[in-house]
Image 1 (cartoon, rainbow, N blue to C red):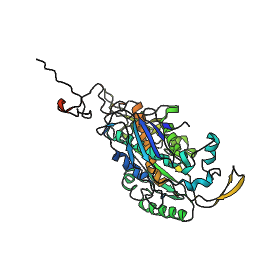
Image 2: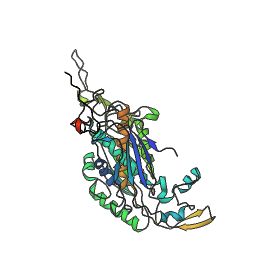
Image 3: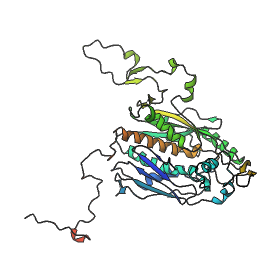
Image 4: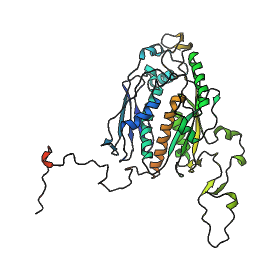
Amino acid sequence: MNGNSFGRLFQVTTFGESHGEAMGCTVSGVPAGVELDEADIQTDLDRRKPGQSMITTSRGEPDKVSIKSGLQDGYTTGTPIGMVIQNKDARSGKYEPFVTAPRPSHGDFTYSAKFGTRNWGGGGRSSARETVNWVAAGAIAKQVLEQSEYDIRIKAHVCQLGDIEAPDVSFEQILEHSEENEVRCADPETAERMRELADEYQKAGDSIGGAIYFEMQGVPRGLGAPRFDSFPSRMAQLMYSIPAVNDFEYGIGREARTTAGSEYNEDWEFEGESRSDSEPSSGDEPRDRGDPTPVGNDHGGIQGGITTGDPIYGEVTWHPPVSIPKKQETVDWETGERKEIQVVGRHDPTLPPRAVPVVEALLYSTVLDFMLLDGRINPDRLDDQPGEYDTEYHPSSPVNDPEDADTHAESVDED
């Protein structure tokens, strides 16, 4: 099975199945000298983990991360970082009826048709449980960016559940309010209505879709390349990798289909200069006008596949969870029977509330990968001091007195 890695320099390779022994990943390309410990990663894993509210699956997973490699004395060494997260509360028996009778709208049949076999417990590799690895990797990318010289901030919130839409909110409101409620909506009043809607669908044995708005501040201009390595193409690839994602857009998104070119195009002006200041200079020397900047940001911080330095924003849409307790029909290819089935496992009635940290993690990973590729951050070491070996994060000799060491190194008398 291919397709288990993403990223070019900041590269993440994952493993594990929903009901297997453990989930895990290897993160390559993390520069040396980044201060890191398990608590930095655990904070974001706790935001994603199941059982955190009544509108999430009740599966009792602590999602405790264990770092197995890539650290020395609390700093990254530049070598691959290996992480493992044990599965503690798998109950595969509830999935036995679906081994040869695929659940409607799941990957059961397509996986079996492609590989001739599959890990059926909890959906195996196709389960959204796999996103725990992505969040762990994204937490590392976040630490690299936060400890760099760049002020890059990324945040998301649930902007819609069903037909309930949140009003436009500022980036500061998202930072302040999105983690204050179970729905992770930055507008408190809308969050209450969303919670009530999720409760209604859960009680009815049904589910509902929704959407997440994201925004990235401080991403420098010039990241990305035209065509297949453009910033939006790489971003979209990761967003569409999230289970149950049906749509991705940035800037004005779908509104572009009904927008005239004269309305969509954004004029250029000099940064920090109003239109009234734009008359030509009458002096002998040209006026220092600052950098060209577009008037407006309908383009969502990206033009020609390359970042402009403006905020990057967009939305990701989820279809309703397809594991629902309502009775449905399927066929059993082994017995040749039509069957009425009921999915009685532990499942979320809506996905966006737990997907917020997943979106943020993948966006942090995308930005860091481009920052490394573009040389904005030294891929080898965060301090960008090639050739310097006596650093504050280099390990000290564990033994001050060579006589106490197991292997002795005698001092040479220079006299």
